[in-house]
Amino acid sequence: MNDIKYLTVSAITKYIKHILENNQHLQKIYLKGEISNLTKHSRGHFYFTLKDEQSQIRCVMFQNYASKVSFNPKDGDKVLVLGQISVYEAGGSYSLNIYTMEPDGIGDLYLAYEKLKKELQEKGYFDQKYKKPIPKYPARIGVVTSPTGAAIKDIIHTIERRYPLAEVILYPAIVQGNDSKISIKNCIEKANQDDLVDTLIVGRGGGSIEDLWAFNELIVIEAIFKSRLPIITGIGHETDFTISDFVSDLRAPTPTAAAELATPNKDELLSRMNEIKLSLHRNFNGRLDEKKVRLMHVEEHLMAKSPIERINKQKEKQQELSYLLNRNYKLLIEYKKDVSSYLDKRLGSFNLTELIKQKEKTHRQLDDRLKQQINYVLESKAQQFILLKEQLKHLNPLSYMDKGYSISLINDKKIASVDDVGINETLETILKDGKVYSVVQKKEKNHD
Image (cartoon, helix red, strand yellow):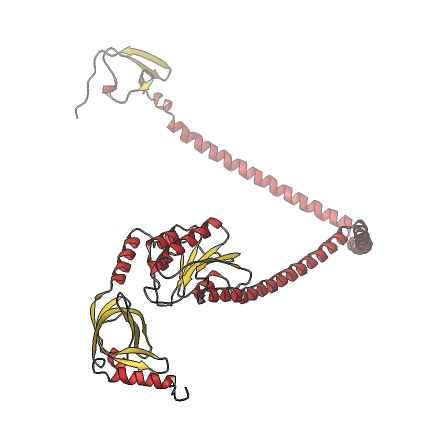
């Protein structure tokens, strides 16, 4: 037994590495397969799995080779590659270092994904009008995921950190493999039947397109679309998109992000509550100060309206008016005395007898002037009357009758023309001393 020589792990790994990397059949390998779980490094490297129906192999394509690829590779692409087997000693795993890559059509899973996605989009499964709002403050949050995976731990930890008031109810589901689609669908339907939660998170951690395929199955999509509960999907990594993400009410890039979208942040809520508290204090103190000022004004108003205050004010006003009355009365008496004294002095300076004589003389003069004016006006009006009378006399048509003229009428109308008279009509002729009635037997008209 002591002659046995044990090798170290490093030694056997180096030996395997030497054999594989120096085998001439493994130094230049042409492979075809389907890309899965592709990661594009920020430095330009490609990391992915190349697989077929039965097996898979890890692949790496460094930036100097990846930059020469003529298309944009993605999960589900079928490709033709040239590479060399390489062993990673620290991890004890082998991989394929790829030098060239060419497209070889599109993978069957990717075609099925695009076909179903297009059909459901045309049916309106992705329409915004079907999206249900996510409750802001959920009391219970249901989670449809594996009970043993890292996703449930991340979700519970995130919810406890952000919003510990919410209770988490787990609906344990198989999220990978042949039975996963039935399990996920049943859990969604059970959560709706139980009616215990406000929001439902459906998700799992990252994986290849095959690992996540249950969330592209129609029965799972139908369960999400028909769910009465609002559903947030958090499936895989940020770059992973399943059809369930398009149908759900809200898509999160990861399960942790789904828990964040399902809950408010307690720190933000506490900050908001403190702001509201301060605002309430400010408003309350402001209203209190306002009421105090108003109360003070009311008290002043009541004091002003009290009977004693009004009596005191009336008493003060009566005293003020009494003082003013006495003062004004004394001033008025003094003024009247001054006026009386002034009039006495003026009156003493007048000679009444001489003043009366002067006034009588003035009265006689005015009387004489009035009589003269009256006589003048009467004479003037008499002359004017005689002139108007003469003018009126000349204008009187009867004055022409004294000279032998007459006026003829027919039916009380003046005759202005021969045409105004008809044969056998009776004329009325007015003379100076009477009227004459005659019948027309003949009439002549001047033609000059």
